[in-house]
Amino acid sequence: MTLRGMGLGLLAAASLAVAGVSGDAEARDLRFSTPTPPPHIFTRTAERLAAALSEADGDQIVVHPVNKLGNVPTVLSLLQSGAVELAIVPVGDLANRDPAFYGWFLPYQFDTLAEAGAAAASEPAAAMLARLEAQGIKGLGYVFPGQRHVLAKAPVGAPTDLKGLKIRAFPNDIFRDWWSELDAAPTALPLPEIMPSLVTGVIDAVDVDIDIVFGLKMHKQAPHLVLTNHMAFPGAVLASKTWWSSLDPDRQKAFIDAVAEAQAWAIETQVAGETVLLEKLAADGAEISTLDDPTMRAAGAAVRDGFLDRDPLIRAFYDATKN
Image (cartoon, rainbow, N blue to C red; front, side):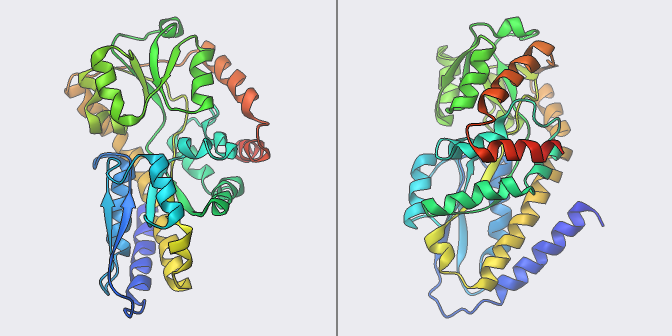
C-alpha cells in the first residue's frame, strides 16, 4: 500500500471516530491558527485536518491563516489560556521557549525532506513536544514545508557572495549564529515585514522555504532563488491543553490519528510538489541555481557543535537521526 493509501485509511478512521462522539454539548466553532497564506503546506494541512475533524454534531474547525488571530507568540499565549484550540506554528518559535527544539535546525542534518519527516517519528522528537504540556500546550505532531534556501535580490554563486549580505533570518539564536558564521548580516524580522523590507532595502535576501516564496510572490522583489538545502524547518501541530483535556479519549485518538495522516500526506505532497513549484517560479521570472559548498558545510559543523549540548534532547535527537 502506498503512503497516500495508508493515509487515506487513517483519515477515514479518524472521521468515523469523530462522527461517533456524542452531540450533547452545544455546537461551536473551534479556532485553528496558522501563520502562512492558504497555498502554504502549513495552512493546507490545517484545512485538511479541519475537514476530517469538524464534528457531525455541529462543532466546526475554522482555519485562520496568515496570523489573523495574532502573531505566533500571541497565538501561543491564546493556546495556553484556551482562547484558541488549535494552531500550527514554526518550531523555530518553540525553540525560543525550549532549547530542545534547536535540534531540528542543526545545519545539514538532513539531506532530504523525507529524512526530516522520518525524524519526526523518533522518541526525542516526541519528547520535545511532550515538554510543551508544562506550558499548557499539547503537541500533536509535525508538518514540513521543505528545506531552507536563500532568496536574494542579486545573484549568489559562492559563499563569498554572502559576506555582509543583509539576510532575513528567523528570529532565534541558531539562525543568527548560522548566518554570522558565513559572515552575512542576519536580520530578525517577522514574516509580515519581509516583503516591505525587501522593497526598501532593509534586507537583501531571505532565508526561506520554497512554499512561502511561491505563496507570497517573494521572487517579484528578490528574483534569485539559490537552493542551499541547509536546514529543515518543521511546524508543530499544537492544541490548547485546557481544551484537549476536555475531550473524551475517542475524540483525542481521532485527532492523533488524523494528525499522523496529515503529517504523512504533507511530506508526500511536498516531495512531489517541489519540482512543480520550482517550474512555476522559473516560468514566473525566478532565477534558480544551486549552491553546495564545503565552506558552508564547515560553517554548519561549527554551528552544530555549538548547539549539540545546549540540552540533552538535542544530542539525543541528533544521534537518533544519524543511526
